[in-house]
Image (cartoon, rainbow, N blue to C red):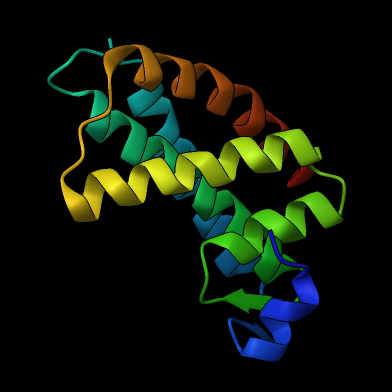
Length: 138
């Protein structure tokens, strides 16, 4: 992935006044969404929707972290890069999140199916990453 400065220069990230209340609201929404979907049994019928929602909940936490640090993102990759740059997640975890982002995009916008085994693996990996980001936001 590209460095964080690339997203700033491109305008995909804007400098803003940090907004703790907005950040808290996103954290609450992200936790509620994640908590609901991670409890579901993943099946062939619902796997793609659970993966999409899990990704969205992680993105909400990442956006909350950006907003808390004075940035607004108009990119799905930039928050991942920022979290890795701040050592909230490892480079390996940022790759996992970027793969999850790509999987979600292919599913949501191109109707690609997500195999059951991949949906389950993605949910397991996402849980570990979600918990790390959540701890960083406390």
